[in-house]
Image (tube, rainbow, N blue to C red; front, side, top):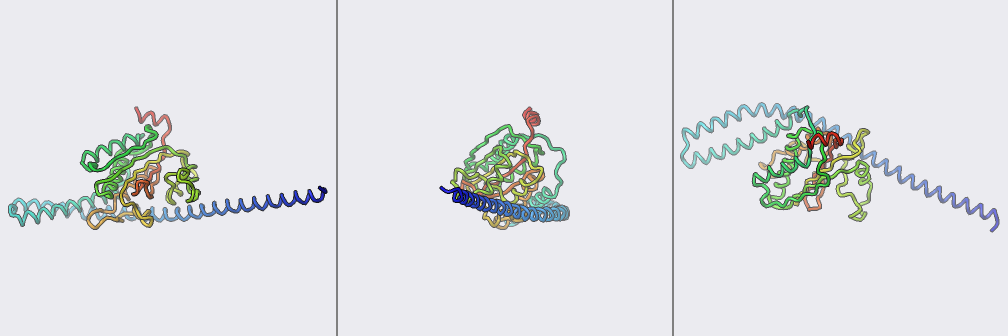
Length: 319
């Protein structure tokens, strides 16, 4: 083959290679720009949400204080009326209804105080699997899991985080009660935990929806979690905890709203709309993040990412 022709072919191959490289680079830049735009939008929403939560917390504390005192007086007067005029079916029935409503308002006020109360400043090393086990036992002892099949999938039992144990317990209690309520007291509850790398979580956001199921990450992070993972000081490894149920699930349109104060999908009178807001506040106070998505069980899967402690601190938690 003549040398000029060979050189021409080589030139064409080089041009083709450059064109393919340019297309690949353009695709990478487009993907990274899309991810960056999504992260900026999510970060903006996170800041706005933090401002809303701060304002709501101040409002909640004021309302709880103003409502608490007259509510205590109503409960006291109800007791006095029962002592003086009780005994007849009509009076007792009315007073029973009054007491139930007072208790419901007390729960709402308690939720307001929990939401507005500053987090404790003395956290310690806490074994998450131990806390989860204790919470399940607590909820079971109350008879709420009689018709619920609880399945465990804990890959690293000695994983520990820095937390106030009571706050972590309350967050898990709220998640379990939310799941049981969503299933109307009967169904399947799955508790999973494992240590994952931040890189694998970020990589999950760029996988295509038509990837084979076994190749896709089980719980791809939401935009809320993407902001958390995109921080410069993010941990290299995190503890992922999943509380999944077989209930009706959470519509995608409500995936962020469920963590807002006073937002509830339950019928009127059945929820305060503060349980998941308190959970999100607690998890974020621990330096973590939380989101909800469709569970393999068919219902809702609440996914928590929590910063892990080092080996020395984990050993201290075990001892």
